[in-house]
Length: 182
Image (cartoon, rainbow, N blue to C red; front, top):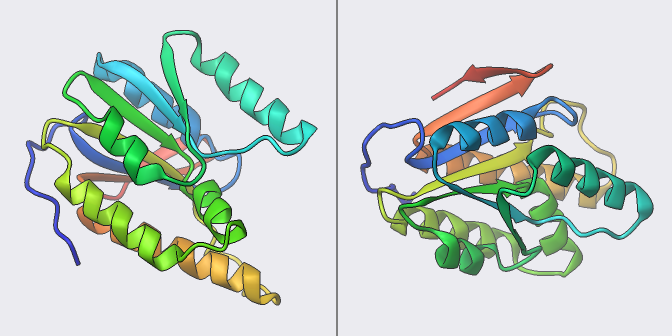
């Protein structure tokens, strides 16, 4: 396991992980944290708009954030985008890790290697940098019957554990209510 260099335990420095179910309020909570940081805000989007429903979701997120957010769309090469965007003046919101995992799986990439690389990059970020990761907690339901769905759930669970281990802060959001875990 890669350990993140120690950083001041400030709410807006270091790595934060925000987990929750679909429509739990995790993205809105992450955006509020970014707004309160006083830093330049960068939204690193992993989604791809393949259909009208996803375009509508993306539009809703964009309208809620407003024009003061910079946007980088990166569905696959998340580590390069993080390295390029990280800095003392910026807080990065990555939304969301489970969409990123889906993109990796659909592109037939080595998901475990990509996740390991992401965690390595997080441990190498300058201590004054700030990055919040939003992800869906998918492991609390029944065991899926299809192999791909089980693989997805397993990849997500392992990635969440890896990021939580190096994160300065971890929250779980239910019904719009954040619970601080770490």
